[in-house]
Image (cartoon, rainbow, N blue to C red; front, side, top):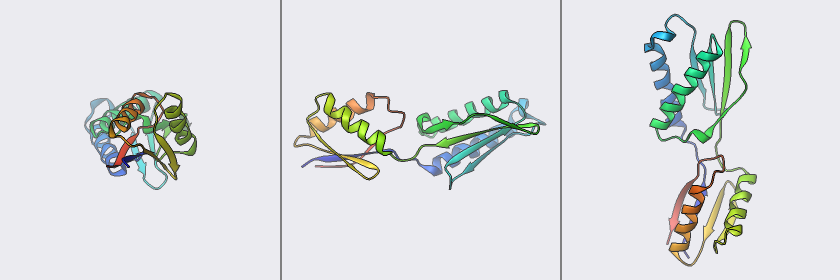
Length: 162
């Protein structure tokens, strides 16, 4: 029976490249010359720390980071910016990265599929949702439907089996 899995995976190496490219751009930009601006990626905690001398500069760095992430095909929905904090003469902002489907989002996906008349079987299996049906066409319409939904996480469809 045809099936596919719905997951939300974060490619940390792409995020790492985007952070490196942002750091290179900071070094070449005239408006950041002579100021303390940094971008640090903590792969273990899955968070990015932005530091600058003013909140305006932090916003500029976040915008640059988002554009580099989009160039690397990382969806901006994975970013969860926290509140800016001032310490000393620097302003810091932590951006947490969302990775994996949590149980609430998985339940929401199953509920959406059932409520909107899609006659597919959806089951939660850990950090993914497996969707099965007898016909490939109904699975593809379910995929198209889920792509249109705004769930706050980027969804990937993998492990498509016939």
